[in-house]
Image (cartoon, rainbow, N blue to C red):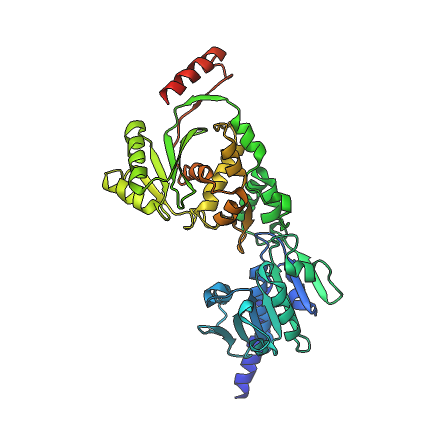
Length: 454
């Protein structure tokens, strides 16, 4: 029996050496006694990994009651449960036993539990009164109400509250209440990818690309700066008006058509026609039934032979898609749900955000692009505000919010965005006025001819 106790003590004493790879900036998690330890910053800073590793290490040294909290937790999958399980596996920590809704250490009896704060009130939150460490993950979503209930509940002598967050807005509640005015019992530390010695090289390359292409997004996503009120717009009016300037006569790029189908009585069904760098025109209609929309699409496919016709298949669109598929156009048409998973899940919250951001990049990249000079299109493209989800991925405000502000749905903007639903192989080249291949007279003669053809 004595030999067994010695082996257990020796095991627990030696295991902290496994955690020497915790970055220096996170050492205060283990070495300093503070009521609140508040870490914030951008993507790649390693906050979640460092918090998980530090808690697992402390939980092996002595018995602790650790609560992992977030604002909303509909299921255990919404919590840091999986991250802790992955770190236990990665380090080979066999003294931790994983249950369906908790994690326990078989030697020290440390216990991890997982809760959503929005589900708590002054009565059922009493179960947290004995907590030694409360970890609030994705703390940018925590409400003032949740904090006012939680803070006095974690009352055990020597208890700590660990906060990790990527700042979202200037007035994030926990930043205003805690981070912006720390007292002597509060540690506040900003950590970005450049402060994390274990940041993967791939993330560093992504950060550098974002810094070059979109400095404002870089400041928010990678440097942890909050979004200022003026930074909410996804697409600037300057970039749209620059694209209104006539510069392209024709293009050999494949024709791609975007079709946004009206969902409600006052919405428009809009077709967008784009060849590479040149968005040629829009065609919009009101109060069409599914067959009428399908007939218009059929005529476009037969007469103009687009490489792809991307269409919104949410709501009414599913019926139009089925009609076109029955007519034998399955190889041309592609159905898109704005709310479905993005092709690049690490960067975008859904396909809608991904496609609209493709429009933004298209407008700001070289060579210059051209749009039809259309004030309604300008309003559509500049009416959509951006934000970021809990994982730092780009998302757009709900369409209903845009509609309230704009007074209508941004149908032309959605139709243009749909032309970027999937990559289309493009070896074409625009014929640009002033590049030595087109004279001033050619521009206007051919423009008149092109108008007659339309």
